[in-house]
Every structure is written in structure tokens, then in C-alpha cells.
Image (cartoon, rainbow, N blue to C red; front, side, top):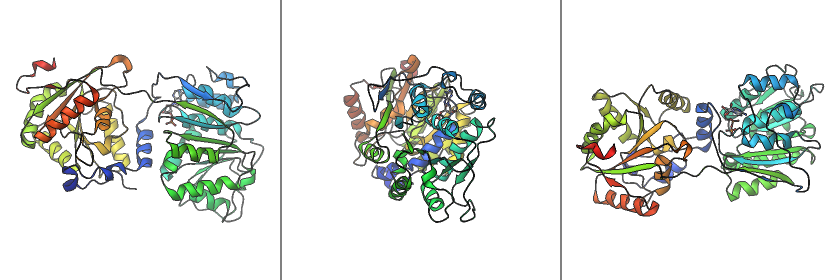
Length: 445
Ligand code: ADP
């Protein structure tokens, strides 16, 4: 897929090309999140649980011991540094491990412990005496499948009898000889081939089926159809588990098709707010002028850490080059980088190796760097019609209110049009955006 939506600078400069940006590959974004995630995302919302049978008792666990896992698995869990189940794991794990088996649809934002949960469920489900594939997990891309496999391998590292195979492109296999690996993880196309053309897996012997990243999966028609075809080959009493980071209507319809009689677990994202953010605007003439204003701000930028948003790649690299020429240390997150390169830039920034990160909206969507206390909109966020893009504005500078962290936002205004946008944003959020004189920065104190 195309990593960044490849906004054409010329078009995007006048704000008419956001549609391309929106096409930013969902799978790439999900992978980026996985690569940069080091710990659980904090979320203070309540988990919502909808039981298939509301009269049966609702089990939740506060410790991994309560799950009565095999000692080898419990050891693997603790070895990963997990002390207690995450919010969604508290409910999802007992459901996934229950006898008789129960189906589950679970939705929560990335980083809340879904992958770890179903990895543990699969490992726990396997009967090691049986040398055939019992757990099948499908994921939208090769890279995402590998990421899941890594979790299973780490968690299962003391449980030597469980074996894992990857049904991904390029994995050479012999036709007709059934796999002995109890867990298979792969992409829909290859899994389908392995079940039908190559007959390596007997779908009737699968007793646990996991579909991860359902929202990403159905974004591609081919994947959606293949998933349904795989699902149709399974036994009716195979345990079905489906996970998604988001839950639009389309995901929901798909989930209901794949998972009959489900239990449902949801954890809503924490709302973003501008309440703890002081917002300013600076009036400039053109980009050189904005650059000067930015340099005047630079001292305040580097007190903590700052992110600077530009509308296009071209502008982002222009700005980075100029800041660097002035002797500043800045990192650039840019569209032409591979997802691994972007992950490493974000990682360095998180570690504080660079204090300032220049980026376009497309590149940084969905990433959350907690220590950023100042956001500069070098270009204001606009939609395809050139109107204020309030949602993007909120994503850039909003905070989830965790720890009541305070922050600053500075908006560069370079035309009457961009002044109108500031006014639209003020109106929309009903929050004041104050004029700032960068020659006199006392207001920011
Ligand atoms: P998701 O699949 O929802 O994106 P992951 O399962 O990948 O979430 O978990 C996100 C991060 O949190 C990973 O780095 C993972 O190792 C870690 N993690 C998962 N469960 C726990 C837990 N119970 N305790 C501590 N860390 C956890």
C-alpha cells in the first residue's frame, strides 16, 4: 500500500487533496502503532460487556493466576513483564477460556491488550497431544501477522510443545502433507490456499478461529471475501473471536456475519479535549515570515518537546532543512520513509534524542507522543474545500486529560483565509485562540 497517501504537494498546498491523505493505508498505521508501542494505553473508561446469555454469571479476573493457566504459559506471561490483566483482558480472557467455548467480538483502540489476549487464548486452547492445526488466526497483512506471531512465540517460549506456522506469502510448503503446527497465523489469501489448494490444514479440525483487525480487513474487498470463505469452511461449533480497533456500522455487520451468538466487549476511547491547552495564533506574511516566527519561538519549543505540522511533504522538508541550517536539531517524519524508518524516528523522538519533530498530518495520524507540550500548526488543518478541519485540529493538539497535562498550541496565520479558519476553529470548540507576538513572548509564560 501507499504509506502516506502521497499528497501531491502542488495540489495539497491549496488544500484540495485531503482525500488522498485519508487513504493512508490503515494496515500501515496499525503496524506503526505496534512498532512504537511499548506499554498499554491508559484508558479510564468503563469496559462495556454484553453477554450472549445475560443470566449467566459474568466472570472477570484481576490476576493471571485466576485463569488457571498451564505453569509454562503463566511463566511466559510474567516473562513479558505483564503483572495483571489489562482492562479488556479482565473480561475477555475468562470468556475466551470458558468451557463450553464462547464466541467473542471485542473492540478497543490499539494498545489496550487485544493481541496479547487472543495470543494467550490460542496458546491455552491448544491440545499438545494433537499434532494438527487447531487454532487459526488471520490478519490483514504479512507484517501484522509476523507481529502477532512474535507475541505468541514470546509468550509461549516456555511451552515447547506448542508449534506455530506462518501462512504468509513466500512461505514455501509441500502440497498435501498436513501441518503438525497447532497454531497457524496468516493472511487470508495464503490461509485460503493452504486450506483448499494445498490441503495443509483441515478447516474442519480448527476449534478456535481468530480474526484480528477486522476494520482493516474489510477495508479491502478481497480480504473481506477471503475471510468469509475461510469462515464458511469451519465447523459451526468452532470458537469464533473477532477483534477491531474501531467499530463503524460496516465492521459491525461483518462481525455479526462471522461471529454467531457473540459476547461483546467494548472499551471506548478516551475523549480528547482542548480544556488544558492554551491556544495562540501568530500573524505572518509568508513562509519565510513563519520561519522567523518559529525561530523566535524555538527556545520555548525545546523546553519540553514540540511537534510542528505542515500541510505537505514539500513544506515539511523545506522547514526541516531551514531549521537544520540554523543549527537546530530537528527530526522529520516524512511520507517517503518506510514504516520501519518512521517507527525509528518516533522512537528517537520519544527518547528525547530530538526535541522537535516536523511532520505532515498524514504521517503522524494516530500516534500519540505523551511528552509533547507544544504543537505548532505551521499550516492550519483544512479539509478538501479549504474549510477548517476541526477534527484534525483536535487530534493534533487535544489531550485525553490524563494527568491533567497542560500544553500550548501555536497557529501560524498567513492570510485572511487562514484567519477565517482560526475563527471557525474558535467558534467550533468555543475556546479562545489568543494573538501572540513572537517578539514578545510573555503571554506564553
Ligand atoms: P492491541 O492488540 O490492543 O493493540 P497489545 O496486545 O499489542 O494491544 O498490547 C499493547 C502493549 O501492551 C504491548 O506492548 C503489550 O506487550 C503490552 N501489554 C499487553 N497486555 C499487557 C498486560 N496485561 N500488562 C502489561 N502490558 C501489556
